[in-house]
Image (tube, rainbow, N blue to C red; front, side, top):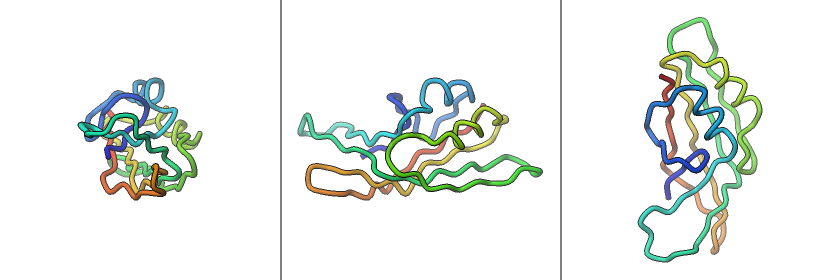
Amino acid sequence: ILTTVGKDKTDGRQAPSYFLYCEMGRRVFANLDNFVFEGIKFTVTKFTWTFAPKGGGRQAVVENANGQIVPGSFKALVQTARSGDKFIIDDVTAQGPNGPVKITNGSVFTIL
């Protein structure tokens, strides 16, 4: 299961802050790539997000979110992000057909 933000698969990639905010900053998804069975869905029920600024002078932020909606505090930091800043989404739990599932691989976005 791959964790993504929005519909684009950008795990471990670099993105301009406006792209992260406009295109991806709405929901966190749990996608099944190359999965044999079609139509099986997982809905994110909670996740942790981290803002890791590059350089000094700004504080790192770690927050927990319930549901799949990206919180306003995340969006606000994306709007003021600088080149080299990182946003990390991890510790994801999703609801699948057989109950909750812990997703071990998160997503890291580095601002260009």
